[in-house]
Image 1 (cartoon, one colour):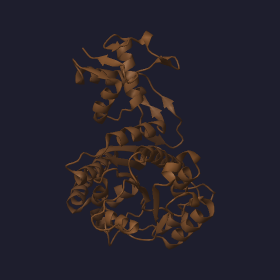
Image 2 (tube, rainbow, N blue to C red; image 1 turned 90 degrees about the horizontal axis):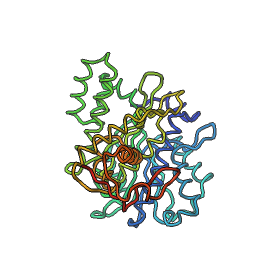
Image 3 (cartoon, one colour; image 1 turned 90 degrees about the vertical axis):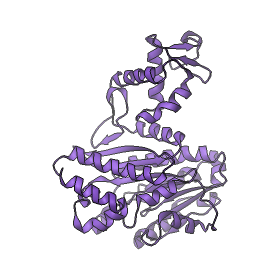
Image 4 (tube, one colour; image 1 turned 45 degrees about the vertical axis):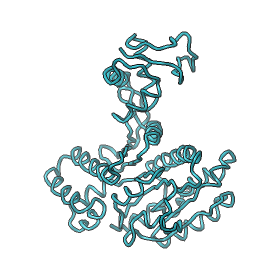
Length: 383
């Protein structure tokens, strides 16, 4: 699904959506690599559609930001010796610019592994096989833990099922910048049928085409159906493992433009990304993050009602049990888009309203910024 006009103008100036996207990816790369480097001998960060690395206004795009965040920090010497960056860009001009930008602007000499910069499509080989080839892995060798970022405005050759093949491997996760506007239009465009079949698979693409044809004037429902199809494809691809998927929405006015979609098979990664995405939310209705950015919006914090709802759910879910704050969070976070802070606030509200018993009581616990803490030895008893 090429778009020459977009290719020519995309890197003129960094948009607010691109800035937030890069921030989410960079923050997650930082947290993910810190966790994985404690046991993995090598880590991989792969950007499948990397672009040219820098906007014409001078702003760094995601590839340069990701390398800079690792290479320029003295505190991450362990990571510098473990991480392999891979950047792929099919556009010949962008590929050349990316190569120059990385060579001229980044201290890659501080990295043990020089960045791999490729110029390949995904039409001939699935994503996992491309990764293995770029890393020169021998048959039988497992792909190292990899964080794969996919920002494809073209989508040519991309398969969600093939991304799922990567996701099934231990330590591998996917961040996907999903251009909702283009996919929404393409799903009802016969000229784009081939590309949508590659993206969703034949059966799901045909099903989506028929479902969406009947609801052309119901944008909210169309959005829900398309988003669920993307999530379900990823979940099916990793079966029998469980895929945890969280999205972050971008809107222009009243219309949805993009999503950042994150997928992992590890609960810790799921919780970390929710925490990161929540800090970029433009609003907190009922005290919960919206996981949404709207153009020209400012951050607004809502009321406490949503945290009361979490508290009520916990009372039912954990009735008669005695648990730590971490145990409460770890076993319940998959039920909704709730962050670790949301759980702490809800538990403190339950304690304050005498709906749970906390030992030691709050007067005997350490305080932080005027609020009682819930340390690892603090036990919460649900009636």
